[in-house]
Image 1 (cartoon, rainbow, N blue to C red):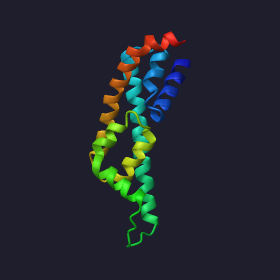
Image 2 (tube, one colour):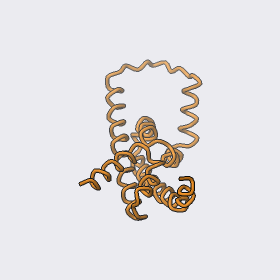
Image 3 (cartoon, helix red, strand yellow):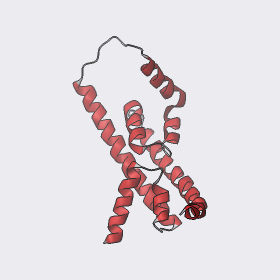
Image 4 (cartoon, rainbow, N blue to C red):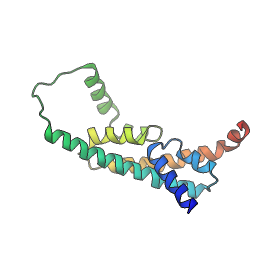
Length: 148
């Protein structure tokens, strides 16, 4: 029962703080493949929750708010447009590994919710970053142990 609660806690932790998730799982003594499985499931839980929750929220907001016909271009708007057009969905998926799942998925839900590829890019990014972060955690584990 304690191990099940520990895994549930790790899944919830990884769904919010993905960057530190594989390291935490390795530190608790799980094997490489157990770490991969826990990290992917936790990351996917976070992506589904925040992407679809954000999409629903932004659809609800756009449904009940009135928009003005006149657009104002501020520095913030220009930066967002530059970021969206310059990096796009691929750049956002790349940032997902070392960014925060809630923030990146809310940005994806805001600007790419009508693109059918978005959820697949986010889920694929979680898989790739899980292998990268787990590999780095295992390689650097002896150095972390020296610090203790």
